[in-house]
Amino acid sequence: MKTPAKMSSLSGLLPLYFPRALAGLDDRLRAHWLMRGAARGDITVVRRPSRPKAGLLVFELRRGAGSLVVKHPRNEAGATVTAREREVLQQLDADGRLDPWRPLLPRVVGSPGPSGTLAQSTLPGVPLERLIQDTPDDPYAAVEPALRLLAELRAATGQRRPAADRARAWCESELTALSAGIPRYRSGRKAAEFEALRHRLDAALAGAVLTEGWTHGDYHPGNVLLGGDPLKVTGIFDWSSGRADGPCEIDAYTFVLALRSTLTGRPLGVLVAETLRTGRVPDADRALLALAGLDPDHGVADPVAIPLLSWLWHVANNVRKSPRFGHSFGWLAHTVAPVLRESARWAGARP
Image (tube, rainbow, N blue to C red; front, side, top):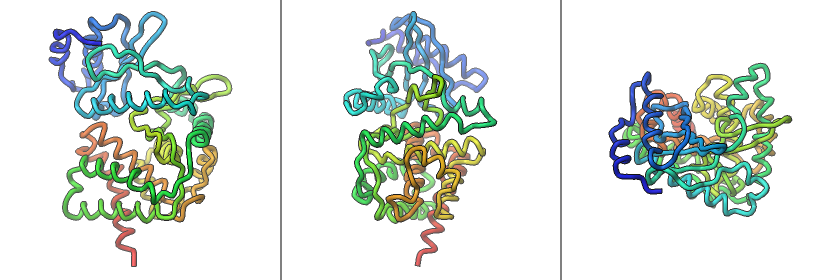
């Protein structure tokens, strides 16, 4: 839907980032300006946990008994995300193999607001992340449906492939995005660490056989909705990293790593680096992965193959979504550096 020129110019006067104390007011003002003249209704801004790095303004537009989730890009990176997510949602909608799970997937609807804005159907349920926080005595009680669903989707859309044959498709664009998004790893010792990561991936995937099929790419407890009694998955959102020909196994590993990081307070990069150092997936993670029908030692000569590939997709997706990640000292120190250092240690230890 076209937006009046006056609206576009006025909304452009609002800064992309306000001081944290005013951030909520800024988001609400921007959302109302964006929708002025395009749609009538109540607006609820959806809070984002990593807001200082967010390339998107996300809000719910309520009209009568219905509602939409609207994503508006704050910058060029955000525009790339909304364009990509629109494409993926359209691919999901056209894939007949997913018909049994159609109610769980958001649909693109007529986009109100300026060009580049993505509007999609809302999904019912409560974020799994919130359910975990609300049940501290038994945080694992709600995760089983989310993991079992991955086994179903993998069986419906996946085919086993030699990972070495798919390594370029699954790794090269991610490595390129990571290198482009983190300037400090382009020269000197840090560039050598990055090259060691490439060799570690090649070695880990050699001889591995993984499943090629629909891969969410960012499947963590914050992107899964649950409801009902007993609990079941009612929605999966944020598909901008999705691919019909991705390595399916990484969704389960990403979920488990994110869960363990949330419960222990330990950074994801540190957890992956420990797995690289020991060469073995921890027992607690194995029990969860079994719910998704995965054995960490099955189909791989090197058990670190899928944790490392999952980490690569995670960090590459982040720098694609916002350049601010690549310049964040804390994020680099806790999420990226431990894995690159461990890769360099591995490279130095080889005969």
